[in-house]
Length: 301
Image (cartoon, rainbow, N blue to C red; front, side, top):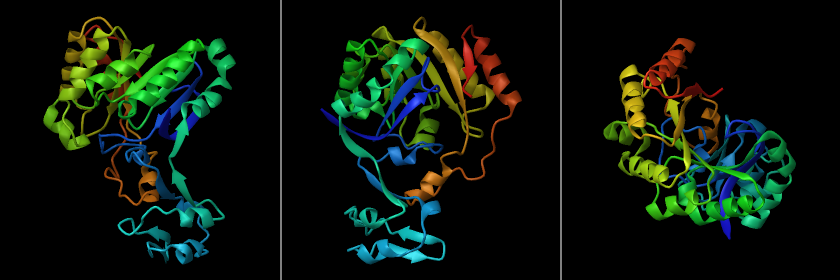
């Protein structure tokens, strides 16, 4: 069993209870404007240019058979329309400025990393989270990781945007102890505008997940000028309240631009350049609104 990942993060405290190892899989059908891991959207490994590490030696330019790499005053530029991903620029880059983002790995290899920290999971109440990208794009791979974890007595958390087939949802959630489920926007047209797809399937899969008995934490990336207004937060809270039991809480993820430089590394323009951050008062008010519906709400730090 193999899958494509772009990172395994050990000692994570943001992706579920306790100390965790988070496995980030590649491939996502959504293209959220605020995505902080744009390199995760392509299901295949991609060549990234870590421009801050580039010494402008020009060796990558010399070896590229497609003349896709050029040296400019700002540094190396990859003309993506010409690149055939042969990887010769990566192989010749002594400074690791040119590097692959993403690799095909076996479940055995992933488990070898996971099991190194089993003691920490046990002492902290932690475990393993699979995130992305989108885990439902690789359901067999993710489900097998979770199955192997549960055999070892390790807690599993499925972090998903919910866009996938019913079969994929059932397969992954059958091995999940917890689900972090993202809701981006309640309005289907605005959801399409901000992510590229409407939210119909996502909402149906959320209800399916709850029907399978998996405990769910709703996570909401809170983005100024997109979904952080009180009207939308009230609509979201009303919907979540209507889901009944099974939803543990609502967790707001405040907007940040930490991933902005990643866009340049893969030859893309960051779509929300200059967008402000939310104020503490706005975050406090969002929590207050959700709690007014009798739900528990938190803000991720």
